[in-house]
Length: 113
Length: 111
Image: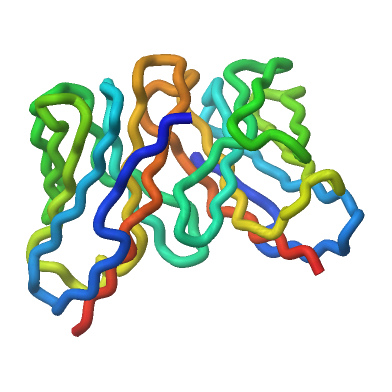
C-alpha cells in the first residue's frame, strides 16, 4: 500500500542531544514537508522540499535541519539549538509543491527529558 | 505568516446532533481543505474545495468554499461517536505558497 511512514513514533531525548526523525514515502510525490504540532495550535511549517536536493525553510526552521538526497526520503534533525523541541512532528507529501492535498504520516512524538 | 481563524475551539455534543465549524482568513484563498486528526495520528483529508461557492459533500460531511474566498465551513450531520477528533481547516493563497492551518476544532460526541 502507498503511504508515508514516520519513525520512530515515540522518542525521548536528553537536552543537548541531536535527534533525527525519519520520513519515507512510496507515493512517488515530488514534494515533502515537515510540520510541528503543539497543543491548541495549528500545524506550523518547519521545512519543505519541492524536488530532490532542494529544500526551503518554513516559518519555524531555527534549530532544525533536513536533507533530500532521495525522492522517497526527507529526514528531519532536531538539533540542540532548538529551544523547545518537545512536540508532535508530522511529515507530509504532495504530488507537487503546495498544490492539492497533503498526505500525512502518523507522526512522531518527541519528548526532551 | 498568515494564519487562519478557526472556530469554535471545542465542541461537546450529543450523538445524533449536527455540527458546524468554520474558518476565516484576512486574505483571499484559492484552495480550502478540511482534515480530521484522531489522537496520536496524522491528519486525514476529508474534503478539498477549489472554487469559490463550491459546496461538496462526503457522506455526512458537507463543506463550502465561501463566495468571498476568505472563509469556509464544515458541517457534520447526525454525529456519531467515531466523529470524535480534531478538525483542521487549511488554506492556500495561490500555487507555490505554503498551506496555512487553523488551530483546530476539538469535537467530543457523547453517546
